[in-house]
Image (cartoon, rainbow, N blue to C red; front, side, top):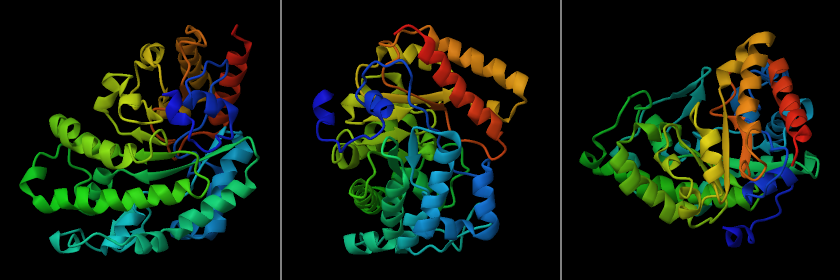
Length: 354
């Protein structure tokens, strides 16, 4: 795996760089999915003045939102402030937020006639490139910056109006669905990922929460293989992958086997057993987000239990760990708990023997 990372652009944050390269260290890097969001008073103040779309599509505002949690909580990594669903606009859907995403209609086979040109994709998403450049200029040198896209199935599940279904078993019965996935969305996402990497994203996360809807055999034999061949291998060692109930978490070697930089551990239990078997890349997780909603005493108990599980591991055994949640920060999380989490993790692990 070391060969993979020789080609990476500079990873600015030392702890994040060590985690990506699976180098032992005392204190892990910390950042949360949705760390710039509704739980944060800085975000709420901006939201009173601007719509969600304005915050996402005005690069200066997007950078200001992304900087808020860095300034207030001192996370090690900043992430592009945007939304996963914007690529669907290129397929003819009109997107609004009220406050959640609302489309004027859903995709049909007439929307999937031909791939979108590279120039159109880049033009439609240039606000992300501009936001990344501004954010990088505002960030301290020692803070990392990452980008993200939605996974192709997650995007399509929204575009088809099927995001709330438990299991999707009929993909192969509808050729236009596979055409949308493999001929339209994956090439589109490949262009957006390249654009983000060319504009200061150190790595790019593929957030594919709804891929859990896919039947396991289809996910393993068709879907994730297509992602591997057309995205993960195209940007070898520069992509991190997340989906709930991710079948790839069955084997730590899948990170290197699928040419990933890392994965998010989207489960409550088992990361402390997974980590010692991780030889390449990073694994991110896995504090339960609902704990951040609790009152101080109860929260401290949960945090102490979490830290204890990982402090039993040596620095070598927990190499590759990005300390985080198993999903994103919830809107009603308490800011004080976020601060307690970051401070206590750093203090505790700094005091351990190396």
